[in-house]
Length: 119
Image: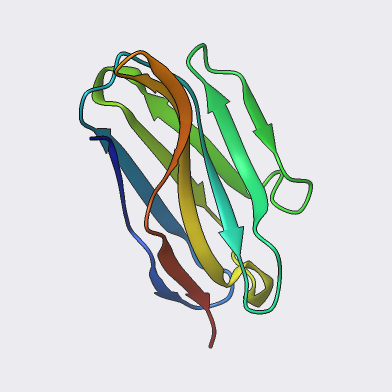
């Protein structure tokens, strides 16, 4: 059984920073891509950022220059450093991983962590 467990969400003022973490655990053979998605109330889930095992990154235009995704392969962990936060960044943030477990490659999701940007 594979689990993705997120942490680090919370309430922050506009212009502030937060760091999200997500650790994958279980019977994992290999993790190809890890990433973060978010879903604001009344909106569809959207990509925030992804990172491959080799360190290649991809960001949504709305977060470029403000958010940084990183990954520690040895710990099966991905991080999202969020700076210059605005109320528009308020959402539930979900960790995502494309990985092989029990010789099956599929996508897994975390349970989500709430990020609220408000004064």
